[in-house]
Amino acid sequence: MNSAREACEKHLPGLTEALADVPLSTLEAPGGPGLDAFRRSGGPGLLIPTTSGGAGATALEAVRVTRALGALSPSLGVASAMHHFSTAGLVALVSSAQAQGPEWLLIEGIARDRLLVASGFAEGRTGSGILDASVTARKVDDGYLVNGTKKPCSLSRSMDLLTASVALRHEDGSTALGVALVPAASPGITREPFWGAPFLAGAESDQVILEDVHVPPELMLLPQVELGAGLDTLQTVGFVWFELLVASVYTGAVARLAEAALRSGRGPAAERATLLTGAESAAALVENVARTVDEGPVGNEELGAALTARYAVQELLVETADRAAELLGGLAFATSPDVGQLLAVSRALAFHPPSRISAAQALLDHHAGEPLRIG
Image (cartoon, rainbow, N blue to C red):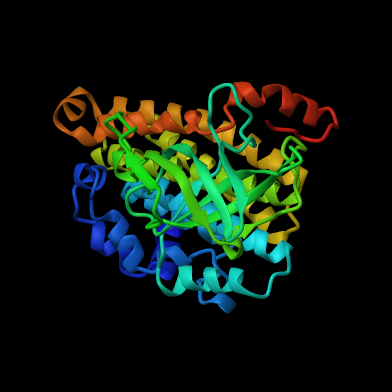
């Protein structure tokens, strides 16, 4: 975790110190101090280019920072990962369109004003492809009217801006993909409770409902992608960032549990050494893919590598967390809420899209030489 904490201090100065003595139970509860500290430290600009006022962090630096945040507070790690996924997607989208105007001004504003950006992209709906937009938009004279629901939506309470993939319904019946940038204070946005689990509650993953929310034309980005057409470069970049960031969050959370077991000195050396190899291997798998992202360009091969690493990390973290909890012993489990909290969190990577089971055939086909298709 040394490299992760050094990267965090470099790019988010003072954040670790601000939260180091805050109990995990406080950080994991709704309304905890994590997000405010993240904002104050300049976290929103981590992946925004330096030319636009951001930190311009590399993918390798970003996964290390995210791993450190996951160890400080898994809820903060998840919330920040969704913000960074959104901003990385915006930067890629605007760069691909070679835009010069208000889009870049908006990105500059995120860094300058330390705005939190929630993701309303269409992952994780039962029975639907994760590229299918669950939010629709209809063109009107002065922009678009956006309707739909996103659940869960991390940062639902603290967001300043919502980025949402939308299905644009044209008058001729055709449908195209758009990306709406919706100010959180827009009329027609409501929030309802959704997250009922006792862990990761601090990520504010509730339901966001949009009812005839007006989006001006300059805040509707129109990538040249048809719904159902598969993965284009932009979506591929988004998927790779998403997998790297969420895998890093949970690696950090499990590393915190492993560190506690190592400090306890309990158990034989071989068992304690296995904690090291498990946590270090998970971090190395993610960092290896991050280095290829930094070398660029990002394409189908990198997506396959990101998913392969994510599923391997998913298994490593469960094994490492189980071993760490066992070494800490039943007394620690019974007397400290942190152990149970982190054990539960160690399982959560499996619930992020795409699930290992749903992607299995796609990975097999990719291994046999076919393009990797997810949906």
